[in-house]
Image (cartoon, one colour):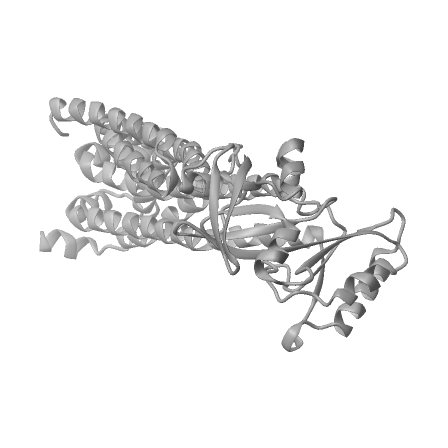
Length: 449
């Protein structure tokens, strides 16, 4: 094993590096906070290196509990501590990535629902775009709103629109709000702020946008619009899922004036309790089909829940690549264990041949190799679960900084799947060297050596 001084230095450096990761995650705003994840990983590896003797003893202890074949596997582990540690860490890293990243992504999706409180309140949206897209245009035919209000069962119709403007160097999405609108900005902002905004005397900003602009409540922002520069006072700042450089909200009539665009890009439709929603939807769809947008642009009808689900699905798709990486890492852990055990079998051909010559059965030899693999996988799983749990909490803090959504930590039971599957993959990877050891030709191994 490494010198005691080196282990102590690694332990101190690892603990300090992990502490630095937490400081970075808590204090560094914006995307730069992602660095904390890499710093934490480096600190975790240093700390685990310092714990090498403890981890190797844990593998040896686990092997000894497997009796006959396991005790021989324990002897082999004691003779190669660095190899055992490296293999344990390969398994641990695979599990830590799965537990940490999957847990934080699940928390993010849950927090997005909270961030978008109000989006799913309307029973239906009649929109210039589908549920997966922001309704930036074209404007709806004014006749649609009149016909929608006449549909039996419809009790309220509120218009609104989305547009893009430039604030400084940022491309910003602005929502035009009408009185009675159901929107996250309305639900999250103070009543005074909403009132001033609807009166055309202010703007509501998401935290991402406010931070990038360096403004606070009460400051004035200057917007570049098609009809010239406009200035508005920031009335409130709320957490809102990050889109482009950020999101803001103003009175709908201001967007009409600035963009010289008559009409809305979406309608929020409320249905009376007890009304037949399917029948209402059929009538709304028929109205939308009769009034396409400019250039025969289709008009879409979808529910408020479908709008929220589409946003959550976008977050899931964004994390799909990360999930794929998790399985690649888990597969790499299995391959690494296969290679390590296979090399160990090749290095110990003479010893295994002597065991076979002394009467050890093929089953005994294969169980010895599998015992070593199981012990390494078990210790790697525990280590990975501990590292992954810390990464999960840290990743929630990082996502809070990068998205400006209050990511609420919640343990995920699905994390145990990211523990069990890599362990099973490791045991499957050990099957090849176990078979190789059990089928070794005794006379050839003894003569070659």
